[in-house]
Structures are given as structure tokens and as C-alpha cells.
Length: 140
Image: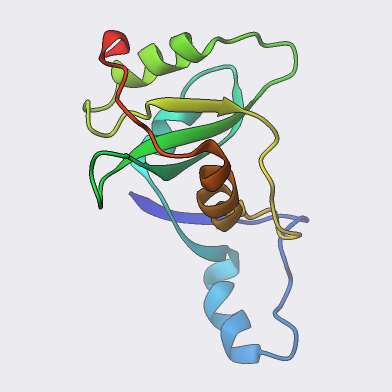
């Protein structure tokens, strides 16, 4: 795991009227987002057809506090990849408990600083999708 950092023309130059936050976030010339790049997302980015990806937890209906990873991704232009292909790709690279069971192909919402809006994915999208009722073990 590591922190997501970026540098370039699309990165903020400073926080509005907050010198202390600016100095902390841009130490060493890199924008430090504070987000951890998790192994689940790293494994998804390894697929040649994936342009953007984000992983969030999806609640399981039979367990009060248990969630399974759900992957949102946008494919590169011209790529045709099935959900089953992505699931198999991840299962070959991750432990069973970490591999997302649900794959959603769609545009991933971002803030003006290009940060993924995970709160939208983890609240609004997950409510609309509902709970996972059973894990599809046939794909494992």
C-alpha cells in the first residue's frame, strides 16, 4: 500500500487561503492526496483494458458488518472486456476474500482535482444496487 501522489499541470497549486494545508499537501513538489492505493485497485489497474478504477465495499445481506469489494471501472477506448474476464483476472492475483465479486462498467465521478468521489460510489451507488445476497462461488 502507498499514498496516491501526483504532479503536473492538472494538480492544484495551492489551497485557497490555507498556507499550512498547502505546504503539507504539496511537500516536495508532489500533491499528497491522503488516499491509500489499495491492493484491490492496484490489481484492477494491472489489466491492459482498464483506464480508470475504484473499489468500494458492498454490504452482504446475511452478515451485519460484512462487505465484499465492488469494482467500478472505465475501460480504454476500443476495449471489450466481460465481467467474467475481469473477475477471473482478479482472482488470479488476489486472495479470495479481497477479490471483488461485483464489477460495474461506467464513468467514474471525480472532483475538480481529479480525485475519485468514493463517497458517491459507496453511498448512492451501493444503495441503488442493494446488498449482495449470496456470493457467486461458481466464478471463484
